[in-house]
Length: 515
Ligand code: 3SK
Image (cartoon, rainbow, N blue to C red; front, side):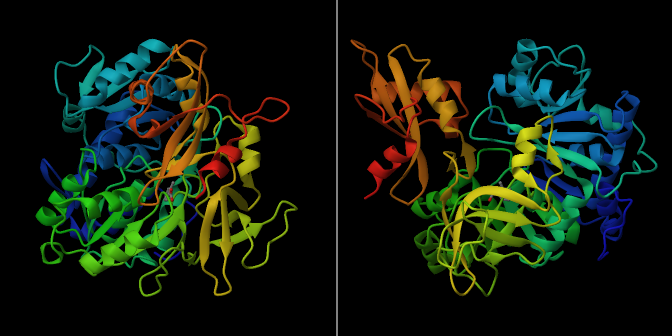
């Protein structure tokens, strides 16, 4: 298929295009293999269960699941049935899930057994509309209203026909973090999935059905969703899934056991791998290409990786709003230290404060246009207008382009940080620090570590007569927020730089950190 028809259901499209390879492996996880035929069968059975459970077209289902084969079954089952999966980060806290449940008005939740306790806390914290709970791989007795996912699938016949959805119709949601306030429900269409597979998965990475894909980024990220579902299933490739944290050692184990040919990671992960004493030899792996996103890849990391494995890391940038990567290096045209050139099918403009395009060599705000842009942020009119400006989407990143057309990252337009590829709001970390009895105020910025990667740094003013140690404050934040958000550096200061109206000037703290 080279054109997207107006009536289009992405799950039905994948099932139809893989019917001839029903016996081939779609997924490999710690439990074993799932063939393309079994994937379709399970997803269509789950679709029946969802409709029989009373879910109606376009209602939301929260998908809080670890990366196992049940994840694609759940996601595709929802799409096939015409209900909207809302895929969420699995390392958040109960308050985050309480907000999301209320915000998306999920009528059902698909949850991994290991995450049931945190979901339970979330459901107790705030009123919600959840009527049904399905548990993937339960780890103990289930709550009264919950059902084992295996039983739901086994007890339902395969749904005969997919929901008659349109390509432009809302298909699923991802949550995107902002510099202020709560995460935004980013609504994507069925067609957006198809576009990212055509423009990046096929055209840039050149994926084929011979490939075995493995992503350290989890399926709930836009990046992981493309890497482990949209792209490989669009070409009939196989995918290795890993539920545990993507430590270097856990990734090496899959590299050597399952021999992936394409690996997707983020700079922090690549740096950790290169520093590990267990880094496998080149001959022990089958990598043909690696992709990197989430934060700018320092050139030195890419060079050292290439010297060891003989394999390029293709650095790119995408966003939850654009669903996947729109600016990237490409095989055979890699310039380390840059993010490459626009992916064919996307246009990029770098604009100055007056809204006009800046000349080559000058820094501008990056705007992107292309067919995979999200439809909106749910129930956030002002924020939607600010980001989705007609055909253009404002990325929030600053870039410069050289005379040959390569783009280089120049920082964020706001105070947000990207840590291990995930946005961290300084406000959230500051507010958490200020819950500590000894802290008067705090300001958080990004500081580069020895590998040139950004980590949160907190400047803290203590209350008169109070004391606290750096380690105590780090542990305090770690207990209350998702683990990647805690400040790796803490500096005690007498006061914070502020504007005349009392706003913290984080840029002055950033300047202080420059060499
Ligand atoms: O952070 C990125 O660069 C990214 C890439 C692909 C999809 C989603 C995101 C956030």
